[in-house]
Length: 187
Image (cartoon, rainbow, N blue to C red; front, top):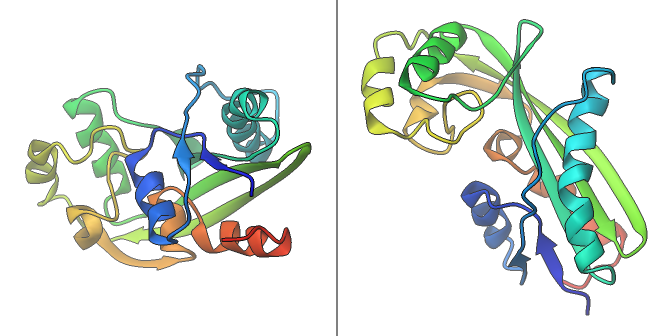
């Protein structure tokens, strides 16, 4: 059986994949995460997932490699990971009492075949202005797109979601597992 390699150092993606019970290893590439502004929005996201998966695929050409990238999109802007507490506070104030979209692009190599898709989830926040300072102090915002982790204490920010919550966490697991079934990957 082919090995499954998660081309990501995200602890959240690792936790999601562990929930499936499948055996996998982690080998993340260290690419510069820049979006190509010349491409249409969804293609920009897709290219980043492919860029993350490709070097690992070259290392393990006979195996299955999963690359992914998650971005928060709000009012025609991409919101990445906050660089510091002030930026995290700014981002969370922007998202407070608003709807934003979370896109996760996924690239999966099955030996020479590359399959890609993008999943979108709309997240509706309550008014969180009174919760932001304590959330920032917790440090939970660090390293997360949109400066929050829906799987942690920030779950109380959410009024509701339209779509897959695993997508917001970082990997639309059901779609990945469906592709594995289509490809007859023994799990």
